Amino acid sequence: MKLPLQSEYCTKSFAYLTVKDRLPTILTKAVDTVHRHKKTFFEKYGQEGVEAEKRAIGLMSKLRNELQTDKAVIPLTDEFPDAAQWNTYIERQQAALGPEEFPSWFKSSWLFMECYMYRRIHESILLNPPICDFDVFSEAKIQSFFSSQDAILIVCTYLQELQRKIENFEESQLKDEFMLLMQVALWGNRCDLSISGGQDNSQKNNPLASLESLKSFILVDDSERVWNLLVNNWKNKTSQTTPIRVDIVLDNSGFELVTDLVLAYFLLSTQLADEIHFHGKSMPWFVSDTTRRDLDWTLKNLQASNHASLSMCGNMWEQNLHKGVWVYHDHLFWTLPHEFSDMSQDAPDLYSELHKSNLIFFKGDLNYRKLTGDRKWSHTISFDTALQGFHPAPLCSLRTLKADIQVGLKPEQAEQLTLSDPQWLVSGNYAIIQFSDPNPK
Ligand SMILES: O=P(O)(O)OC[C@H]1O[C@](O)(CO)[C@@H](O)[C@@H]1O
Ligand SMILES: [Mn+2]
Image (cartoon, rainbow, N blue to C red; front, side):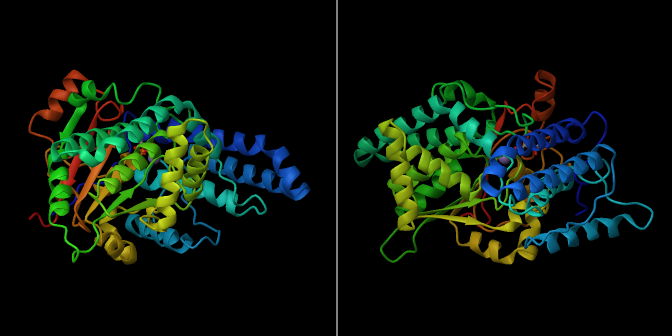
């Protein structure tokens, strides 16, 4: 089959507006943040810290200029372990264009250029010891966590109360609670700081109260299939069977991360899963994506809270990591520009790790773009087709729509949506729970 092209630019496209407006804004904010930390760098590292700050700002300003003037993509020069893979990817893009042309910000694919910008920000910091472990987005992530405090308190209190009742639950009650917590984790994905150009985008409303009214905004809802898979694994469990493993490919830190941890805790405490594996980013990414440091910060912050339910969640979650029933992984593949159908070839170790899973949740919009290759598929093509052979295990995308791609819709569904709300693909107001099982039983 001839694959559709990846999303690129026409002056009205969401991709174009992202690269023209949103990315430079994010870069400017990153520069500001580094600059505001000048004093901290001086206190920590002396004059050397101040020199590093200046050089990092210089590199990021140069990057912004390259972007705004549509310069050619240049190879990475740092020694981070993914640099060679990045450079090979850039060479491949160049080779595909031929000698007359070169990959550049407004000519290459949106996915490639957006990932490249975050990797170049990382390079600007990496090349400048002693500030080379500075996370330019950390402040925004922390602020977003605090702005969502009320919502975080509501979901953590809900989990705490659920724990008291759960032992006596019938299967149908377990199902209801699972469906509810999966929807909370789904809508948690609205809180990303990339779509908002780094502006506060935290959860302000009660996340439980709005679920009923949000149901009609879920365009594809495969939650029954997800539940059936989980409950069948659970029923077929014997002392001989291998532990049931659920993986969550994380997206944003802050409120969304808390909702993922709540869902993970529920799955474990009901024994619908015996172990949960989380996958985070190895570098600051798309402003709000979760790194190991963000996870640790979140747990510590919850543990230190005066609210009993927050500290209880922080403590229980920390213990789960300690006991090894929760496992955190990061892999550099998640921060490459590759679509996931490349994984079996370009990151076979990660593919075989995911293959051990009974169910993988992919959180968020960027993961959906990579699952479907960010290609201009017709809206009615099946999710299985758009995955292009990426089937490590049964998988489920929990995503609010923030990019102009969506597959697996019913005939006419997209046309009707366009009539009623022209922004349906990119506003974050619609969502999907989309499931694919390579070997349905
Ligand atoms: O955090 P998410 O859900 O992956 O969203 C990332 C955002 O970044 C984008 O890639 C655009 O900047 C969109 O696709 C989406 O708005
Ligand atoms: Mn994100």
